[in-house]
Length: 197
Image (tube, rainbow, N blue to C red):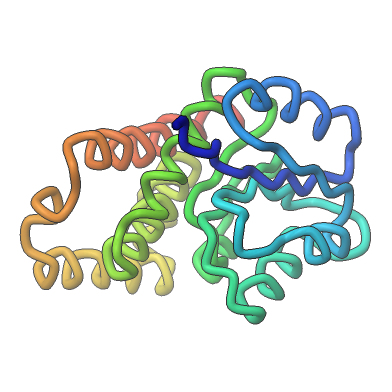
């Protein structure tokens, strides 16, 4: 018997974009669409495996929607999908990945696959990877000198160093496939910013 496909919830207020994501993904996954943050909060349940969340929505923003999801106990992996270049505010956001629009077909599939792999990691590893994504996103978009002057960034870098030491050999806790996906996530975020500036 074939296992049920993973469920992807797309929360995007531009219907054409949401429908486009669904048409790309629905051969591989069960896709649900919500066209606002409020609708996304009504749609999400424990069967959702991955959320693709638009950051800039009217009504509830992506950040407000994500905060409410977390407050309600949904620990599902989330990619923030946005045209906005990452800024220091990402340090306080509870996402697992950050995807900059426009999104290529291959990037969309890769992101869902990475998020599914991250959902299988234990909480400490997943938080470490999400923090690494934030660090990579900022390093791709901000000058080094500016980063060094920003206290929250320095705190993040120190935290990653400490947590990496505590976690030991991070790759040993993952399958080869999970480790490969995690590395791709961080590398993609390191490379995604400069052309957006």
